[in-house]
Length: 168
Image (cartoon, rainbow, N blue to C red; front, side, top):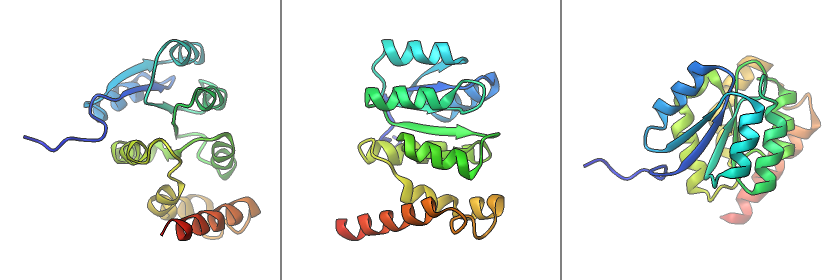
């Protein structure tokens, strides 16, 4: 008997305009009930009509930032999953709009663990863990000094460290 996953029987919406990505997410999250939406309009309908435990949103092609705003308003944790919008600007906007995490599609193999951390964390942002896990990826992609180039990231990282110190 396999151990119980925190994702067992969770209801997840994935919104992406690429059918192969939708199917891959369904395969990765085989312990969840996964609704698939291939457009912004479908995503809006699911967010409006269903009770969801989490959403996974592409940015490009489905107006993911608008869907992120709607998910946050509804209190549904949203994880951004993107390929073309892997930029410091998109990461910063995701943080500011209330996403709980940001995962490049190149790192989709980490989706299950990332989403499980979000569920175990009660849907709260898990940015410290995402940065720990993906720091090397971001440094390779954006340059080793990418956080220093934007005061937002430096201050955000400092606030994460202070928050962790208070919780210890």
